[in-house]
Amino acid sequence: MHLFRSCLLLLLLAICYGTVAGEGFSRCFYLEPSYYRGSVFPQNNSIRYLVNEHLQAWQLNIGIPADGSKKWHQYLNYPLMGVGIHHSTLGNNEVFGRVTAIYGTTAIKTFHPGLPVNLEHHLTAGFGFLSKHYDLKKNPLNMAFGGPVVFALQYALLVPVRLGKSVEIFAGPCFSHYSAGKIIQPNLGIHMLQIRTGARYTINQVNYSRRPEHIPLCAAERHQLMLSVAAGIKQYSRFASDKDLLFTISPQYHFALSHVFGIGGGFDIYLDNSVRSFLQEQFRKNARLDQLVHASVYSSFQLKIGDLAFLIQPGTYILKNIDDFHNRAIYKLGFRYQISPRISAEALLKAYWLAKADFLGFGVGYSFLKK
Image (cartoon, rainbow, N blue to C red; front, side):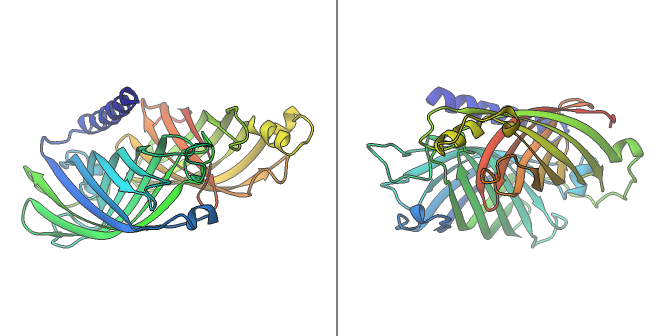
């Protein structure tokens, strides 16, 4: 387990270094300790009655601010890119235990960063390691986590106040989510609403310049027609011991509104082998091949930070061969990294409304219109 954690941390550091080094960041860096206080947002009765205490969490981020050498640095008001570690209680130490997470993070200010007061968006994604999880004999009440490793997602809306050239303090609401993406059951996950407070100290402060004049995008930069394929594993329920494979193919189109924002849409065609587990649990006949296939359409919104794009894709099913197997409304959250002008890698978490994970998929995409 220690080797696995070390490998994940090295992977996050490598991604962060590759992103910031390739985009011409300066050598200045920042340190950012934070403290959290809040409560579990119970989405299920099996979690609600077990929550018996408020949440406390501590976090330390380290990273590098954009130096303005790229146009998108200034369009996004000099975002901060980094990695960090987060330690939190989960509302019941005896059942849910505690979580320690490692992650990549970015902070984007709404207004010019030179202002004394601002509004800041924090996006965080990584892996969490639990001190306790579901065990039929030792911990049967833990319906939130079926295994020791979970995915960690966090969004915070903070108000930073500058106290000098190098120091900022901040506070604001934060939403955190931990789940296994249905890779292992049970997997109700835990949602948390918190107040986050902290400070940031920047070494070798960046000299902020004004946002550059808008430069229109050419046609090759505005349009992207691509095809992506992805695969993942999921466990339908804790009563089904096997992990099922899921494959998806997705034609999609993206239109760049600016150098950093884009919209688009597409559709997914799934081959979902977990239908077999579902039918067996319902004491039905074996699944036919056509019952494993379903499809959905979605709209897409993306935020680009250099070669990395954060994606939000709400959608709905248009083909369900088994009506009671899926909820109709779905959404996907994830990111895409542009390896070359035509090839990209992506990771997307698909969920039902509200926050009921279906599967986590990893894949590659190919762009037919070269950017």
